[in-house]
Length: 316
Image (cartoon, rainbow, N blue to C red; front, side, top):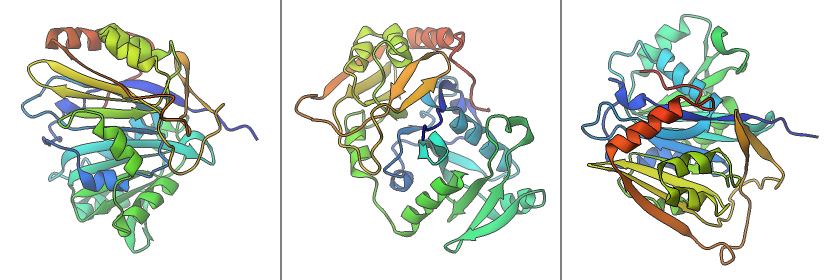
């Protein structure tokens, strides 16, 4: 049976301008421990200390964008809400490529206030292994793109999960088991900068695809890393200049294997191929660190925002 194809998008995230986002200086290990090992795309961001205007460049799916937008809407009545870090995940599900997705958020949340307000509408409160779950139907405005209900769980007032039921279940299972972060994910993150304010772990992009083209527009060295044709990770740190680290190498895929011909379509670019097991010696690590002036980075984002494959921005 052919699996359905799911669209991935490039998103210039404006989350960093949100008054609801607090600063954080390092990845939240609690969130990383919840990420399912079988996730195919993982992206994360915090607001850089002292930054109110600069945006992060992230690649994730349209469903991730809707999760973020709807999480802000659902939790908007919580006047005590603060957000430290956001992690996006997407993986293969029964409904097709990247049909499973979630949003992991650390910060502070008033679960009772959120559940009481939202639960007064058309939502219902359920439980999974003793954890209260708010079942949130698809919003009317997005049912052409996302029609299923999603689950919202808030743990200990300092972490929240919002996404498809199957993915949230996996993440809650990891939470209840006190799981450690996946070793493959941490290995890939170790190749990036320790103080990155945003990062993405991606399947192997096709040579000449959108990832290569947009990164080459910023610096040719970044594009050369993409040309390696292996799973790609990149991170961005905001300092006096913008420091971007990109690396690509063969990795051992943990969890479910993905057929080599499985592709993810982008809205205006060649396909991305999901990673699978490969020979590390045949594909050694390729890594580069570049620094670009802020003015150049801002102009690059401005140019990207005018292109057809840039769909939208996070609410602020």
